[in-house]
Length: 341
Ligand code: RAM
Image 1 (cartoon, rainbow, N blue to C red):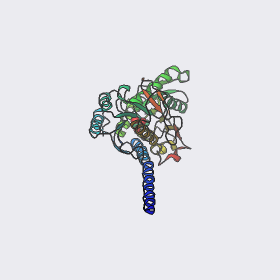
Image 2 (cartoon, rainbow, N blue to C red):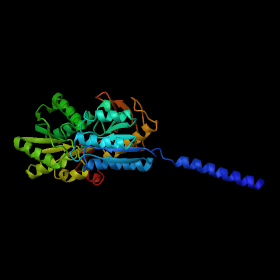
Image 3 (spheres, rainbow, N blue to C red):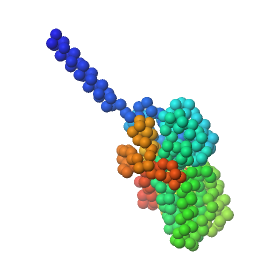
């Protein structure tokens, strides 16, 4: 009998230990679904963002779906979001084509208890819980202006070839470029043209650049704050025989721009790592669903490989979290990034 009791006790202990072990193995994201929505499909920048969500999904155990409209439209994004709400996602992670355009559908999602994050390009404060951005819009804007001004010797006429006319991230960066340009004496011998828009479409970006070059034969440089626009604008300058005469800077993928940087069309371009944006957004979403992190001013979150992630109040009055990492791609550094970004 004693032996029987001892065996039963031993078995019970093994069972109890394995339950604990199983509980330890449970990943914090299990049972959670994230719906990732980006500005448009077929954009390598967002494919890199998705890699970040995938990396976090492998670590945290959540499921995710991802999609973006072909045409960079607000309506297309709204349809994708409604579909995700119907499918019962726990988190929406959105890079918006229009900050105001998605507020209503995002409010509906929030009312249903869905955590709504924007990343890369914000949804206005009423429609989001938290916006996750690479760095402050002012730093991103001024870094490009200063780089191009230096390339142009602080003289002459420069322009901007942007993404969509309603793109929240580009418009914010441009507003800081314009403000700094108007207020800093350094740029007194330069002229800044109004932006033109290539809609994150390669052909359209090429065509608007051609029109700008034709209309401004004295143009000295272009700021291109979009990964799709950067190579299209550079190709146009090259085709027009203006290499070295019209300089480019902007926010680009290294892989797309290496050739143009080595040829001297761009001295330097910049970008954060979109993989990291997707990765951090995932950790934030899972922690919010699990009640381990609340989006509130001053709140901090631990994400592997990151330090000092803290929520602050954004220029628009909503909550924001910055990664604070900006990489420079130049003749010496760009090749080291090929294949990564
Ligand atoms: C394009 C998109 C994206 C922006 C990058 C720099 O891929 O417009 O929103 O962050 O460029």
